[in-house]
Length: 296
Image (cartoon, rainbow, N blue to C red; front, side, top):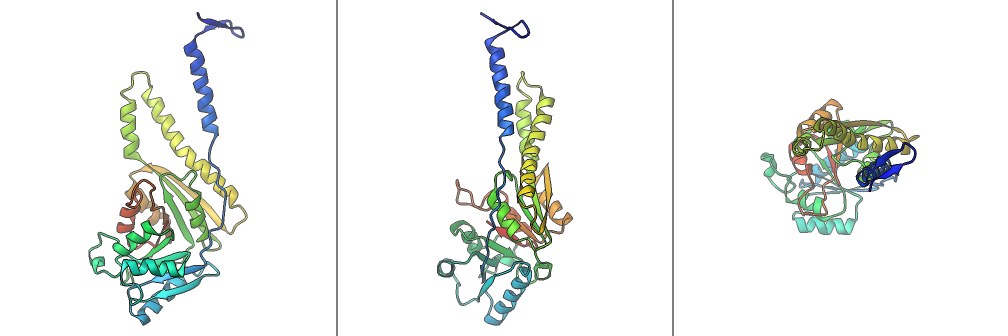
């Protein structure tokens, strides 16, 4: 039997009660959101790995030091072609040196750089097997301008920014004093439209309301997280800028990198559910060959 709501004297049903509970639960979930807590990521020892003869390796190592000159307290170890010619040798070297960061370039110890479709065995294994971040720079043959640009403009890029403190911490720690940290969250528009197509087939759902509400919610959560990053980094010598949008990932990323003249792009590469590189990290690393990248 339907009950009576004494405040309004209107009957209510079990379905009405459940609807109100659902509303309360939705409001509660919307209010619960991740908040950024800053921890400084220290890069005190950089291992610079090359496949060059000693003199050229030293010269390339000097270019790396110029690129990272805005970061204080770094000790550099430069490796020439003789020290780690195989993947196994490189992994053993990292285990012995225990660096905080490995710096190298695509197609290490390979002529594959002439055909720009891969990263090469060394780089792929580094990103997936070791826990050490990899700073992937343009090749010495002249793919990019990293030796003079520095790290004034660093962009952390993902499609799941909210709660990804590790990505933000690494990016913030590599911004030169007075520089800018760009926090970028790009939702995949093709995926969004696919789900909207399915929602549109549900007879009880107002499709246009769902479209507007879902889109707003998807973009609001990373924006709120960026606000918490700003609050946590207040007083530090950097500026935080937000780029939260929806589009086709690769094209949007290219546009944002060019628009903001990004010096360093920071990406996640590991996925707990697979051996291959995470998400769009691989195609971005292959195609954006003139952009320095930190692969986490």
